[in-house]
Image (cartoon, rainbow, N blue to C red; front, side, top):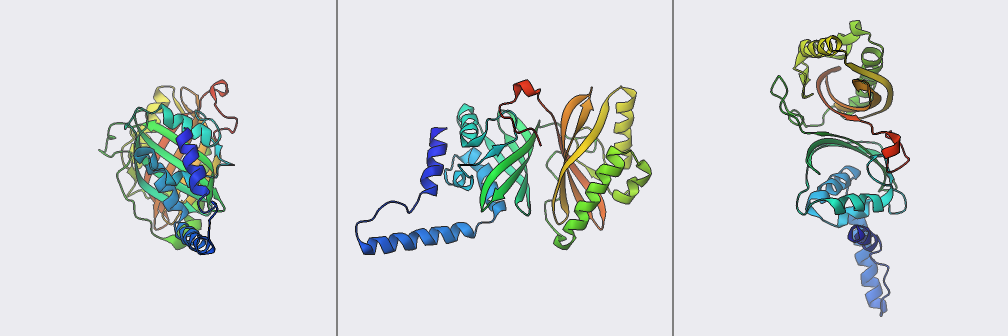
Amino acid sequence: MKKTILSAAVILGIGLSSCETSEHNTNSENHTQTQKEEKMEISNKEKVVALVKSIETGEHEPASYINPEKYIQHNLGVADGLAGFGAVLAQLPPNSAKANTVRAFQDGDYVVTHTEYNFFGPKAGFDVFRFEDGLIVEHWDNLLEIQKPNPSGRTQFDGETTITDLDKTEANKALVKGFIEDVVMNHQNEKMTSYINPAKYIQHNPAVADGLDGFGAAMKYFAENGLVMEYTKLHKVLGEGNFVLAMSEGKFGKGDHTSFYDLFRIEDGLIVEHWDVIETIAPEANWKNTNGKF
């Protein structure tokens, strides 16, 4: 933990040490300026991917992409700030962590990643980071143990990764917002095919098969077994081009308080692919920060 925090402080403080001669001062200033320019060329998306990977590699520099004075943590099992982040890393067994980011996209000051982790066990995760002035100041995530392939043989990670249709970002975000509100929350199933392509719906949920038939079969199973999947609030919709993430709150299974992260791929104005991570929200008495899940 101390090494992580110290490395961030050292990196952020490069170029602040005193110099003995004016020539050395000039060289130091030029070197510092070059480093700043190099860092400016790194996109927020690249910073996040590097930070996530550093969990595996132990590389110190990505810690400098976090604002050490302001890091708001929404993972309820982690304390606020760099200290909380460092404390979790310190608990990892040596050389156990793995992090392979499969998808990453950016929406304004937000970066979304879809990552295959080994982090206290194999997990699928969505992470959302918010930036201010080029530094990370806030983090949300949803994590789930890696499951077996679903009835259609698809995993939680495979499928399309290429970002396209950047000019359609806002329209695609509106489409997903409408789907969550109309179909998922308000059960207007007659509108289903206005949002989902009935001829092509690729499903990566571990328990659900491809197509509208697969979705219908899953809902029938829930109904017959007294289970629920209830979305009560849509908190955020973030997207870039053909990929859109919806972050929602509700109840799942036997009524557990739940966080739903749904990633959709849109093609020609309709949803054609879906990944998700569903995580039970811990009781407030067990929270390690007071920021809430959303």
